[in-house]
Length: 137
Ligand code: THU
Image 1 (cartoon, rainbow, N blue to C red):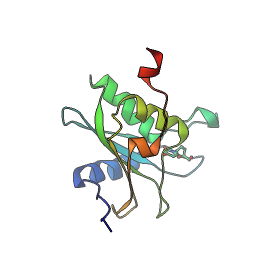
Image 2: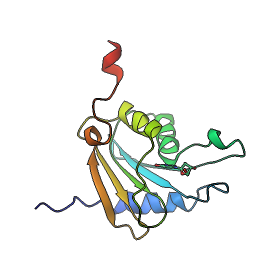
Image 3: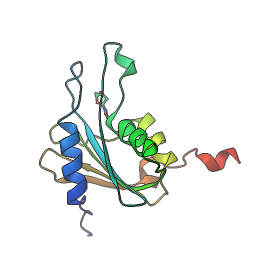
């Protein structure tokens, strides 16, 4: 049996630090995400809620927006951390956002509070048979 590929330390630290900044007074569920762009930059995001509940923004979405603002449109790795020991897997909308900016072999790591890797997935496993830019050609 193979061992689970562990999340890289620098992305773990960035995701945990981002989670500390989460604005989640409604759900009280704090999430952090950190991705590594094609040119090696680390960019993080946290979830940001507001009183109109459905208008909140996920941590992954925040990181992706910041990445695009920085001039990058590709990433190969992303680490996501929620609360406790239950894997905080990206929601459907975030899967689609991750899809836009990754190749099928990109890696999605879900970690716990202690920085331990709970789940390591390829993007293809996260969102199989996905709809992407190629479908529009
Ligand atoms: N959330 C994320 O930020 N990322 C995920 O992967 C799952 C859920 C946020 C949305 C909301 O602010 C809170 O977690 C509870 O759903």
